[in-house]
Length: 438
Image (tube, rainbow, N blue to C red; front, side, top):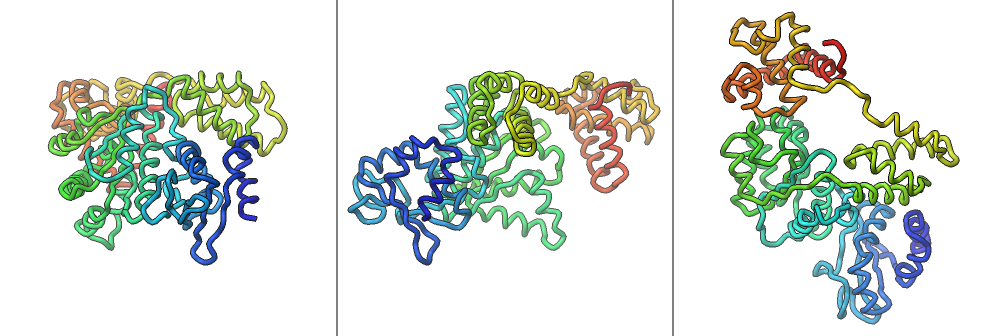
């Protein structure tokens, strides 16, 4: 019964002829009490082929079907569990954890890459195997939509499966802020708790610019992990050397490890992505339509958005997707044309709101209302445009980068403490992005 039901689940994404070739020869039995399952191969050669070709796909789909909390054991007919020449590689006890706690979609198998990103992918696999910690931290950088989060989650999933006794912290800077906002726990206590994990994953480390008060805490956690030889994995939009908002000591320590750079997905990779989603979700897109989507939208996130829109339409409207509807979904998903967001645009918006000429905002004046407008404009430029502190100093009248850094941190403190200022900052950000008259 289990095998037949699971086969029906697999048919949603796997062709019938493929299942006849690699699934039907398997024997799958369930343990009576311990939520475990045993897969029996017909012979050792089949076991070796299965391990190299479809094992990761099989385990990912089985985890989706069963849910969390199960283990899987392999053996070859006529041999003991986990033994036999040619049997698939597995943990010493013959058990494989089927959970994917960081998302079923995020595996090395589903990370689409060509030769441009082959090196980062190979190193990520090596890091995930554990053992000697050679690259610490392992630092993945690349533009938005290049697959950084996918790669970090794939490593974390592989660690969870292959090293079930390991303790993993996976989160973003916002998650860290949530931890440190708990009034019931002291900072040293939270820091000790983080440092007690075996693996540390932080997605989009550059967001620490928005939480400068956490930087010293993160340095303490970093030192504890590095001194203990425990693995750290970070992602970032920028290379560590470009993160001039970081403490110089912290920035230099980030460079102790290995940095790999993910390039934005090119047309061939984007086409693979669209074709895979089209197949998995049975969207019924033609080859021409998949190429159109891959050509019009750069980055995985934007493609995910338009494909999700098409999937929702198919589910609720039913029937085939007409060319007219396809074109409409593309138009709705494309960015509306707005004036380019520049420092000049930000200064213009601030000048209009505060009633202060832009030349005064960038000038040397020290009146209270002028300083506040200048701090807000600097924070907006940093938040919306990601401009470095030295570059901001040049824009704002040739000021030193340390002056800019102090101004932004001062404004951030006001944001944290004052809801009216927080609301104002959101309104100004929205106005800067919308374009039109300032």
